[in-house]
Amino acid sequence: MTQTALPPALPPAHTPARPPSATGRRVRPSRAVSFLVVGLLLAVLLVFFVLPVVWLLLAPSKTAGEIVRDNPLSFGSFGQIGTAWSHLFGFQDGAMGTWLRNSAVYSGGSLILTLAVSVPAGYALALTKFRGRKTLLTVTLVTMIMPQATLVLPIFLELNRFHLIGTVWSVILPFSFYPFGVYLVYIYFGSSLPRDLLSAARIDGCTEWQLFSRIALPLAKPVIGLVAFFSFVANWNNFFLPYLVLPNSSQFPVQVGLNQLLTSTPSFNPVAGAGLNITIPELSLAILVAILPVLVLFLFSQRTLVSGMLAGATKE
Image (cartoon, rainbow, N blue to C red):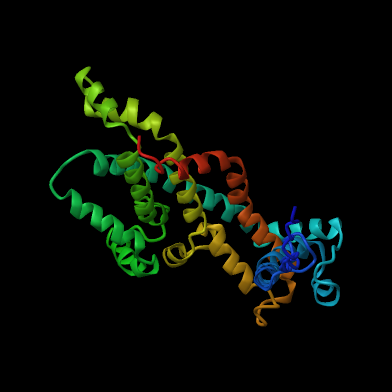
């Protein structure tokens, strides 16, 4: 019986080296570059956005000399904050309080008229058919994208023609028509309001006013809140037009008042009087007081803002 010869054993196959795992110590060059880019962006954000805000928050706690000598990010004392507060609100017999009240009146009046105009206008553009509808919508869009400075001269001439210069209405009326608010309401009603619901209400005998007041308005609360927030912020931060149409300091809103404070600060205006007690700490505190109402409004209306931003995202 012959014995079958076994084939010679094959040499072991060459096993390729495994690439380094993602969890190993070696980092891919592309990932290292990504980390570097993200780090640079965060550093730029920190230097140009975060640090100035931190400095602004800490500046009222120090004197003008300490701001120059000490660490820019150091804290002074709470007593210095009280001193800066008394100097600020004692400027021109309490002009700062007057400016804040004026801003509240101007922003509140413009807000009421803005909602009274923007919501019905957006509803009409979205859900009704009339001659000139497309032209009116185009004019609204063009006005929305135009810089406000381009409209200051014709608005000034129009206000002067009706003898409104120097009155409360010279600030309230020009900003009562808010094209961005009209467009937001138009988008919402055009995309999110169910047409079947309106048709059923018409069959039940509802008039157009009842459709608007009893069906459309309750459903549009999120976008109305969004329009109200943006309108209030725009009116509160309004500077150029009030600076031109209001001649007296007692009529200034707070943004124009800040400009007067700036010109009364010796560090920025060498010819300003040295006895006004308005220095960099008082000016920093004034800026914080001016933005505080908008900040509080934002903190208490975040849920409304988010729901308003998502109101027209889906079509029912």
